[in-house]
Each structure stands twice: as structure tokens, then as C-alpha cells.
Image 1 (cartoon, rainbow, N blue to C red):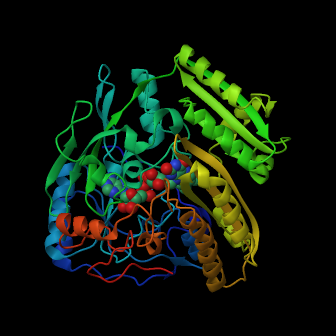
Image 2 (cartoon, helix red, strand yellow; image 1 turned 180 degrees about the vertical axis):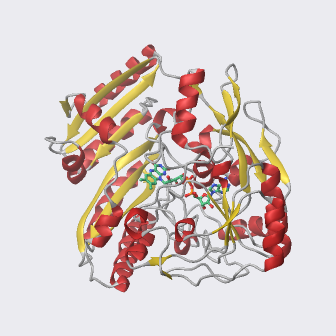
Length: 497
Ligand SMILES: Cc1cc2nc3c(=O)[nH]c(=O)nc-3n(C[C@H](O)[C@H](O)[C@H](O)COP(=O)(O)OP(=O)(O)OC[C@H]3O[C@@H](n4cnc5c(N)ncnc54)[C@H](O)[C@@H]3O)c2cc1C
């Protein structure tokens, strides 16, 4: 059995996989008899390092700069099959041991942090495609399959694509996408992950394996139980297989770009394009600051458009886009080439943290009518914080009824960790507050994890009572990913700061 590729975490090269301290309480060590049972149930059990308790949550990068891991987990358990997952969960349910699933560890909200210690369930050993049905355009993938491995296998061996291109494609997994409700850069044509998932295998907390969905399109057999687990971030069950809808690799591709005098003008063009039923795979609008950063030489608000698929459809789509952008200045399509070449580059969070800079991104969504006001309010509110160096946004995912605004903020508070934490929290509160005031959602595709837990009780669309009831029914011992999504747990309330 080959060794799985390991997660790459920001700052591990600088700070090491082992950090001297922990920021949250360290959690309770596991009793020796439980450890013995886990070793019998699963071939790979190893002590956790600090890297096993972290993900890409930027606040935890600040912590690492100060020598602190989030917390200490007792043990990493790495199953190779759904039956090993089932055996591990049954033991942990019975013994009351917290279990935190983790895979690529590219989550940016602390979702894979084992808040109360216990077991880190490392799913990277369960990887690969287990079936491909070309006629039905359905594939089954194991949860620890890296995104780029999925896409390259689909393309090179089957002429198919999932069309799911998160910026983190090379550092995230299929199971992580489903668990976090991920969005790819081509989502306007292919949909978000919730649109791509046709069914799931899930192991519940007591070790029961359930299967949702099927091999038929749509089903009127009661509520869609697949969607109960999409976005559940490991608190309701462990995903052990994902049935994905795929498409043939596109025959043709078209690129175009424009620039608008204001962000609201550009947003309105996007609205009209979607309203007419055109769904270009990429429809990405930058505000002036981000245009300057990502589109060298472009003034105003750059709009990048890319579509792929049947030539007749892409031509029709680009024709609608061109009509709705008639009043904007057109740019060379090479602006899209530039974006494609650099789209997955990320500045070094560890270097920024060491330079005293606190930075993060916040993706929210709202209806078209609310977006210009939301943009202005969030930028004004973050700019009003003393430490802020910059705040900017782009429209990254568009729908007939609204779009996602993806904000980036950076500030330089005082040198102490407490200064960084205070600023971080204030900047998040500013953007989330603007989203709530606009009637929007506080998260579009990064999920909740630890970081957004404190907002969940107030966020529109969330129903804390229903979520707590589901949790209690599916995981009565409360062992699955405790401390997340703002829910209380047998070990205490959600942490943070
Ligand atoms: C540079 C960068 C760019 C990013 N770009 C995007 C983007 O474009 N679009 C986007 O949507 N996201 C993006 N993200 C966020 C992140 O990549 C996604 O949230 C991704 O879906 C996480 O997958 P993962 O395998 O890394 O999950 P992890 O971080 O390991 O886990 C995330 C959560 O899912 C749970 N989980 C993981 N696997 C399972 C499973 N099999 N069963 C049950 N629960 C499980 C964990 O407990 C945790 O709560 C980005 C992150 C980074 C660092």
C-alpha cells in the first residue's frame, strides 16, 4: 500500500511540525485500554504532532508564529477502509472519545482542529476512484482523494471532468469539499459541490454505514438525505465515499474581459448576464484594488469571463456577455490568460504573520440588490479599524439571485498575540456584520469550523435548534468533531477567541 501524500501547511517549514505550546486547552489524554482497542481496529495509529492539529486557518498561523499549536490531540488514526472507520467510531462512541476527521487540512476556519483532543481521523489513506460510469456521467471517489489527482485521472483516463476547481485543488480532498460545501472557480457552469454530489457513503458515530442518493437522477422519496451531510463538516458522520456527477472534457473554450468604471456597474452587468440565463464558467469581477493587484495595467474594475463546453453553447454565452458589457471597455482576453496562470498562487501567510501582518479572506453572499451596499459597508467598516492596511473584494461566484463577495483584509496591529487576535476578530465582525445587515449569508464556501461558530446562532438560513437536534439524533455521545459549528459538546462550549 503506497503512502498517501501529506498535507502542506503554512508555516510548518518555518516553525516545524512540533510547536512548544498550545493556544486552546490541550484536551484529555486517551486511556490505555482505548488506545489498545484502536490499534486492534485500525492498522495505522500514530502519535499526533502539532501539524496534525492544525489546518490553514490564518489565525492558527498567527498562533504558530508565537510557538503555539491550536491544541494537542492524543492520537492520529488513519483508516484504509470504511469498515476500519466504522470500527474506530464504534469504539470512540462507546468510550466517549472525541473524533475529528481531517484530510487535506486546507480548511481555513479551524474545522479539522481537534478542539478537545482525542482522535484525529486521517482520511488520506482512503483515496482513488472506485467506479466510473461514462454513460451516466457518475463516478465514485474515496474521500481522501486529492483534488488534482481526481481531475487528472478523470481527464487522462476517461475524458471526463468534475469541473470543480477550488483554488486549493492540489491541497484539498473530495471528502473535504463535500464536508465544507466547497465552490470551484468554474462554478457558474458546473455548480458548487452540492450540485455535483449525487450520493454519499457515510459512517455514523456508532459505526453504522449508511448510503444516500443513488444512480438515478432526482428522487421523490422524501427529503434529500445526501444534503444532510453536505456541509456537515464532520459533525454528523464520516464520509467514506462520494458519488460525483461529471461531464465530458470541454470541446471548446472562449475567453473575454472588460473593465467597468465602478464595482456596482460591474455587478449589475453580472446580474443581467445571469438573469438572461447565460452561465459562463468563470465570471469574476474585481474591485479597483484587486484589479490593480491581479490584472497588471488594468484600471477600474476588471471582469474576467471564461466559458467552456459545446462550441454552440460557449458562443451563445459569450454573445450574451458581450451584449451586457456593451457599455464597458473591452480588454484583451490575455487578461484571462494571466489570471489562469496565477490563479492558485497564495502569498506566504507565515511570512506575513512574522512581519506582524494579520490577513484573511471572508466569503459571504447576498442578493444582487444588496451587494453594492454590502460591499461599501464592509469596506468602510474594516477600513475604520485603526490597524487596517487594506481591504478589497471580488465577485467570485454568480447566480440568478445573487453572488458571493470574497473580501480580503490585512492589518498590522501591535506585536503581541492578543493584539493580533483582537484585530482579527474585529475585522471578521465588520465583514460578517455587513453581510447580516444586507440580509446575506455569512459563509458561501469556506464553512464554519471554529472561526464562524459564534455567528451561527444569528446567521440567516441557519437553524441552530434543528442542527442540534440532528446532531443529538445521529451522534448521541457527541463524539464527532466537537466544538464546531457553534454547538455545545460533552467537553464544553465551542472554543475561541
Ligand atoms: C489557499 C487556499 C485556497 C482555497 N480555495 C478554496 C476555493 O477556491 N473554494 C473552496 O470551496 N474552498 C477553498 N479553500 C478552503 C478549503 O480548501 C476547502 O474548505 C476544502 O474543501 C477543504 O478540504 P480538505 O480536504 O483540506 O479538508 P480538511 O481541512 O481536512 O477538513 C475540513 C473539514 O471537513 C471535515 N472533513 C474532512 N474530510 C471529511 C470526511 N471524509 N468526512 C467528514 N468530514 C470530513 C473536517 O473535519 C473539517 O471539519 C481554500 C483553502 C486554501 C488554504
